[in-house]
Image 1 (tube, one colour):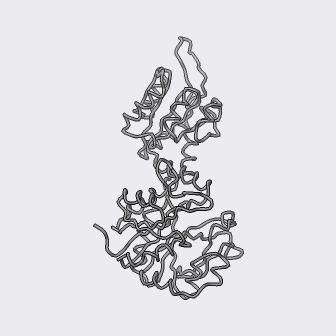
Image 2 (cartoon, helix red, strand yellow):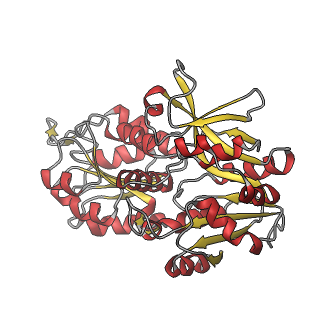
Image 3 (cartoon, one colour):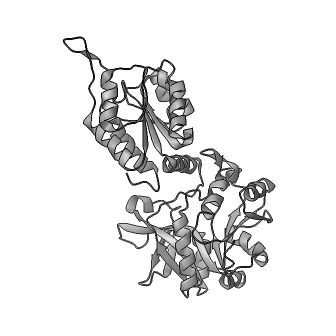
Length: 396
């Protein structure tokens, strides 16, 4: 049942100068626009989700996911104009403008926008997050300054305020009262908005109030091929629920020692032990996979509490698939770390794959990421660091 007080409208145009057919591009296994629509349905309230688009393929995807889709003209200059074109077909008191290139948008941010626009006297509510001096140097990162009540004073592509070492970056997601959105149709043109190429300056110049919510979430808007890669990495990292790890040459340095009685000895790094226990405590599933089988391997798995093991696997990819089945997961839920040619099929099965620094050269070419540490030097600990860096919602 829809909440008849709010609609989340996703403007999505097929044309893009830097990324042709952007909404349809494959990102971590599905079209970019699909991630945005799915995020809109994850909010705590029950909005009507509407996709305003100029392309029938986008319309088809939206409707397949349960969203309403309304066709618009191709000449809308921005997302706000696209929503205004269909506003008479939206029968809600509040409207959230969620851009169609925000696959990592936080549903919690949308929840907070809805709460704020309902409870405050502002015409518009939007979101910003803190960035450092180096990030602020990028003109595509729109900076915002606001008063003691967090009402916006100015937006700029320049670094404002002058002399600061910390800045607030505006995220182009807005919550409107419907009458405020309709008012935009009648506003005088903006000199400052034309200079900065920022529509929100027109609203400020015409005495509309924009309240800013501060979020810790740093979602990635997709405008370039580099943005697309970052978003895909983040989406994959956000979704990871398990790690499958090769043993020899990955959790060990690959060397074999034999005791006086001929028993096989192996050297494991305690950093990996702590890292694996940390993942297990966070609810991750851990799988060990090896072409060899020995008492040291089984003892290490037992010590760490690793229940999913496949040792003595002549076909490691077969063992990898069996581990996935035993975990009840699909390849996109899992990360893999390996070091040798025999790990290549596993890295093809599991796209979110890592090679250790001293891996076979062919594996390095296949793996999505190359770690800086050699096998046996704490590669799982480095994997956690990498996962935290890539993800937008993990804190391991």
